[in-house]
View 1: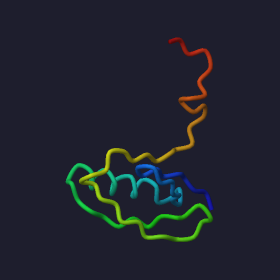
View 2: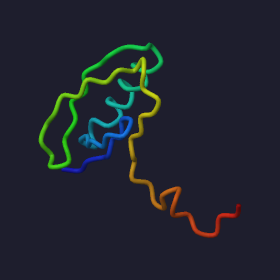
View 3: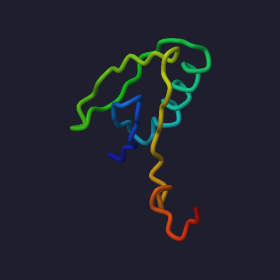
View 4: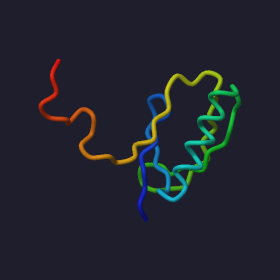
Length: 79
């Protein structure tokens, strides 16, 4: 099963790749509408978990799409 990483605040979770777009849309709606939602995610050991996400107070949510190279790994970048 292919998964993607989901970072909610300082907590790291996983989601099935096939469900990542739906979870991302739910998180985005929760944050823009200041709502609390339940997310079906996976813990680090792939154990299913229901995560209650408060979009009203969330500062950051990231779904890692696995792009290569990662932004912190881009070589030759100028500062």
